[in-house]
Image (cartoon, rainbow, N blue to C red; front, side, top):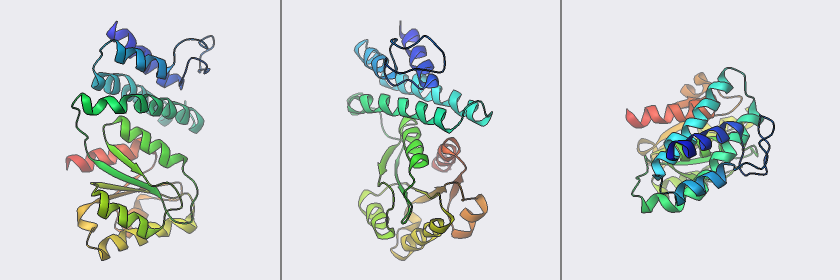
Length: 227
């Protein structure tokens, strides 16, 4: 029963199905439970929260990540799967504290000032929550001082910055500079990402890491966390 429910959660993440009303990549599955219903059933059945996350949600996204890298999946497919994981995590979050599961760390994420794009940031946030991190999402078009103030108040281990425009990605450097000016730079690791961003640019502004996509961003953060 446990293994069957977990595998169904994983499969529905791969299919990108949040509820029973959603279509998947395969035909004929509308009406069957989606991630939301399956996660609720798993909780009611007494399945461990960490197993639902690690063996169901996270494993499903690992498959999606491989399909994305192999160009079998595209951005809309990945976004649908990420939304399914997000829905599952929203249901699970009230149970995390009760189950005694400790966060791997806290990360603040934001799309920098002047940039309204947030799909990539949202995917990274969902993937990080699924990987066991506490995420504080400041939103998009966030000015430098707001990010600095959040770092001072929240005391995260990581800051994730996103930009989709060449005209706004320079603001990432401003954030790193401001963190240094406020005596906070040595207290956080900064990881950046977005379409125009590169590893070379990350190095040039003094970032600690660069994620080419959501999955790579999570891998970089995991690597920095264990360093």
